[in-house]
Length: 315
Image (cartoon, rainbow, N blue to C red; front, side, top):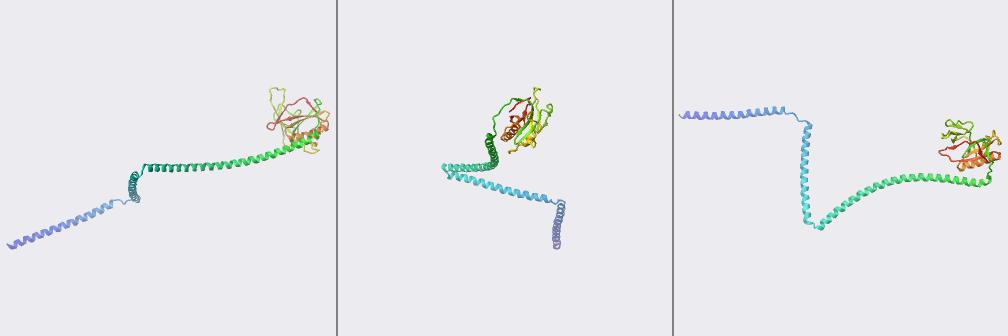
């Protein structure tokens, strides 16, 4: 009986040992399966790209920075509130007024600084304008000096003509109307330009040359009246220098026009040089016993108007 009881105890222990071994074996099997499943799942998960990793890191950094700035803003707000409470608790109304006055004073200083900068800019512009004005003034002064020199030269010429005129002046003596052949000349500066509008000029044509001048007919309402614009051609004509024989070249042009059958008509420009040349020419033709008449002209745009006449009142 005792032996049977011992066999039953041994069998129970064997069963317990088998159960424990089976449990451990199942745990090991399950661990192996879990490891295998994990490795399989990890193999199917894609490797994150470098850009994704950088964006994740940057997002975390920005989130951290935002949290830090938010915390700093909160701390500054708390500090501001504490300063305001301390200011209200420790400052009297007079102190508040002083603080307001100080703030207004600072604002006034800032406004003054802005005005100073604006004034400096205006001053720079003004200096540039002043430099330009000085240049213009210098140019104007040079032009004025040139004009003054020209005026002095004209005054000297006028003085010389006033001094020499009494020696050459004679009283005019009108001899009545002359209807002989007229010889026309334009006196401009120290030159005499021959003008022949009667014999070789086409009054129905356009601009054309007549002697040493260019003539352009003028249309008028009365077709019986002739008129033309006259312009001397520079570089032509006869020189009339200031010397005793200054009219020789001019007088040589009158060789084929005898004094008894011709007279001279002078169109004299209204300037001192032209009048001085006219005095020389007048003395020469008077000495050669030519009748003459002088007609002062005031040119406009370099030209003057002539109206032919069948005769002239000569000296």
